Length: 170
Image (cartoon, rainbow, N blue to C red; front, side, top):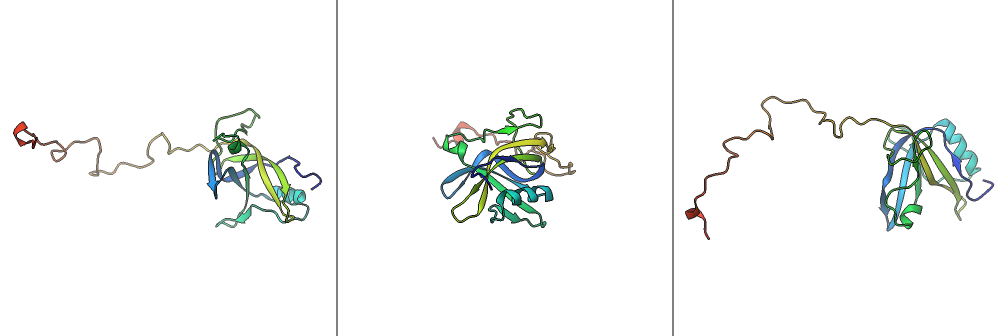
């Protein structure tokens, strides 16, 4: 690592988890973060940038994928809730948020810590491919079950009883 904070762009990778729309609070520190599945190309790049140092934020998921976590507290320190640097595939600013399984590119800043290890801080996110979610707003995703509960149907048991003024205690 030649410079302390040299920015670089990652190749496209699948988001394993993302939270840039809101902040995460951990031990009193507010941060935005994203986790991506590390491809062989990305692995080569981050190892080159780390120059043999231990890389913080790497872990294995349950499927055996290597996951890289990058985070930023810049916007939360400025009082912003949403991470302010999300771009579409054309490089234009967008209010759309990346989510799990979206294809993204990250702009990262490596930072060498006092112990010699390297962390990658999030500078920007570019959404390359957006996964379309069918369950939100476009129906429940469930088929109807005949004879089951119907919230729109009123039965005699649901109808209010007739109450006369003489039955009221006041």
